[in-house]
Image (cartoon, rainbow, N blue to C red; front, side, top):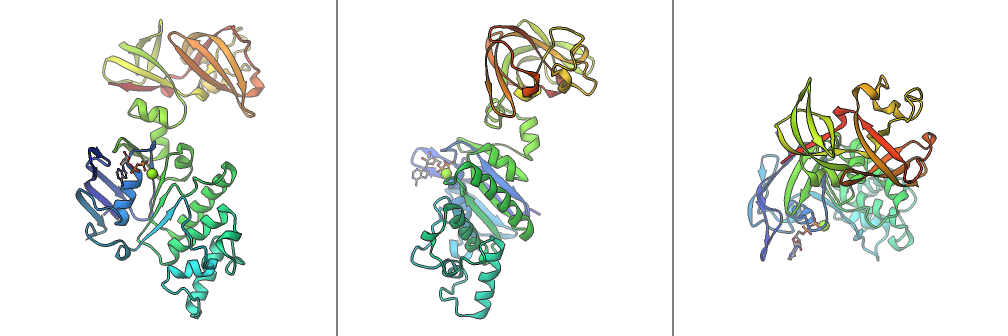
Length: 367
Ligand SMILES: Nc1ncnc2c1ncn2[C@@H]1O[C@H](COP(=O)(O)OP(=O)(O)O)[C@@H](O)[C@H]1O
Ligand SMILES: [Mg+2]
């Protein structure tokens, strides 16, 4: 039985529809991330769940309760926004206690609950301070404490880490996951940042133009995207167009860029072939140093010559990313990116290379 459900929920704004009729299910204790570019309907979906925006059609269910017409303050949802929305004239303790409908923190039970929450967010001594005296990250933790002070049936967060710098953002992702797991709160988290979605979520629902276009665990979305949009939005990927022309053992044979490539099997015809930059290696110039020359990540046996796809190209330029070299390579009709370990050394600009990767690491999109 699913805990939070949207049943054919849609919303019209004049001529714009976002979301289009959408079904979405979130099970108890699950951390679901709604991921997608701006304008996709993520915020509207969250506001429909919270009750701030009535859907144009469809039903919102919390467990067995139909809450479609229930006002926000009766839904027992916790909300965290990007801009914190703390009361500046109340102390941190008063802000949290406000969610317990007791702004004065007089009652011993309220004070104890506030102290527990401050400990949980690692700000045990901040109760008497004002929001303006805290950093952005600290304010966001207070906003989280306030949202969960009254244990919510679902915690809804709309780009809550959007205003924080990258390092703090990553630290907060870890914190958030720790708190969510320790309390077991069903959570829906909106972001346009694919890295953040991957870090946090049990399940990602990718939203584009008002529709959930793919839903699944992060690994599945990354490894088996079902559309070019999702493949490209979740991480970097290289594409080449091809045609499946036959079979070779377990693989389909595709003709692409003047080469024959082995790809996971499916229906014949036109395909888009995708390969992640980190799954590609350079075939060594000399066969003897093949394994030592970075081909070793191609397969457990290191035998790229037998099992790997091969695509020739010319090096355009290389950039150094600290733990990785990114080499731009012109292959037939496309510019690809190859990521390799710096120990392999940089390729000379203009040199001819052969790229290799395993058939099983190939994404195939059939249209
Ligand atoms: N209050 C509103 N009035 C008119 N159009 C709106 C309103 N809120 C959202 N929209 C439109 O609905 C679409 C989805 O918006 P939104 O839910 O905010 O997407 P996201 O959060 O994914 O960026 C956009 O085209 C947006 O312009
Ligand atoms: Mg939004």
